[in-house]
Image 1 (cartoon, rainbow, N blue to C red):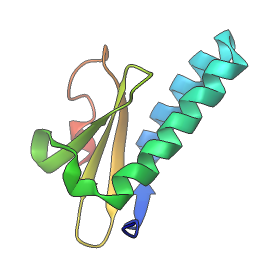
Image 2 (spheres, rainbow, N blue to C red):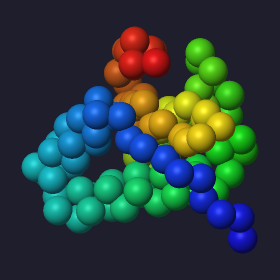
Image 3 (spheres, helix red, strand yellow):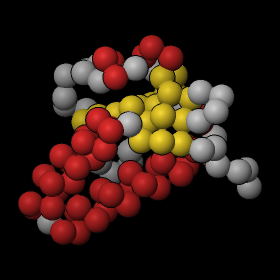
Length: 100
């Protein structure tokens, strides 16, 4: 098994997560827990092999969550991965571009 690369979550990406989690929690504690578990699991999966995920806009990579309508957008720099957005698929495309 390969070693995971170091990563950080951009402050605005954390806000994406908190906003989505608030919405899910207002409907169901189970949905909230499942959403957070999938996001955190995705961070770990991406960190193990960042080059495996789809090339996206402006040098980023994109990972599609399996059970929720979100993509995780990241920059894969030599020293670390930066998660720049946890973007809902219905939100304006590229709204996160100014974060790069």
